Image 1 (tube, rainbow, N blue to C red):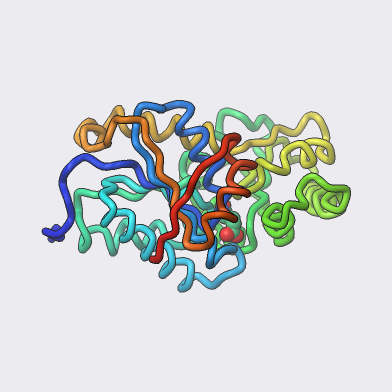
Image 2 (image 1 turned 90 degrees about the horizontal axis):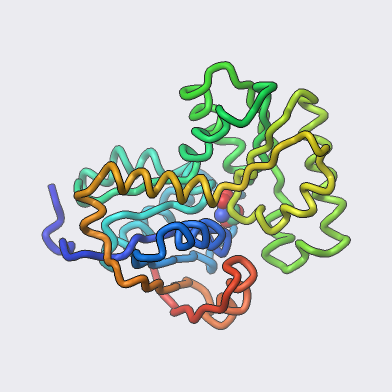
Length: 280
Ligand code: DGL
């Protein structure tokens, strides 16, 4: 049953991440569809999610989704692989029908899984992601549904997010851990010709990952695939598209300190922002 307190007026698209990484996805979405309104919500106070339990990631993500709905969003994108892997399915199937069956929550894993079928030639791909995403095997499951012939190897990269969050992603110190995880992945399956960067933070490490990866291997960053998939979705769902605000405004919210968020967000987004504090 619909919740009568939820507004049916037009509203922004909600973009949620555990912290800063989802800004790389928002950046691609804004570039493709600048006409829409967006709210970005980063749960920086409780990041990282990648090493947290299934239950906590689900609870935190559901709190954020409910908050974004109360702020007027009809459509929320979980721009976080860990949240998409651990919480999306339950929210879509169990919670949404109870909260408001007219609202939608989409993730980043399905659009990325769809993209690899046309890219890999060897049909052997690697996923580099947080321990939570790799352990959930959500990429394997989604890719198997769409491309049963593709062999998937997951590699957890627990130190990459902390390196990025602490501003060490462009230092010589990061080289060791970038090379280590890339080498370990390729040692597991030398036939890999495509690697999905299955964490929204990893585009910041792209140059280093490229440097330590053989040139024939294609690296997939998610932002553009997610943005195009969202545009397709809105073309196919005109009822939802009609409920999105169209003033081209974006507001940024963080559960942590806005000053800190603003300082770090520029690196992910490419331009300065002014965020506001929010409690979930
Ligand atoms: N944004 C998360 C993801 O894409 C990574 C950061 C975290 O561990 O919270 O998986």
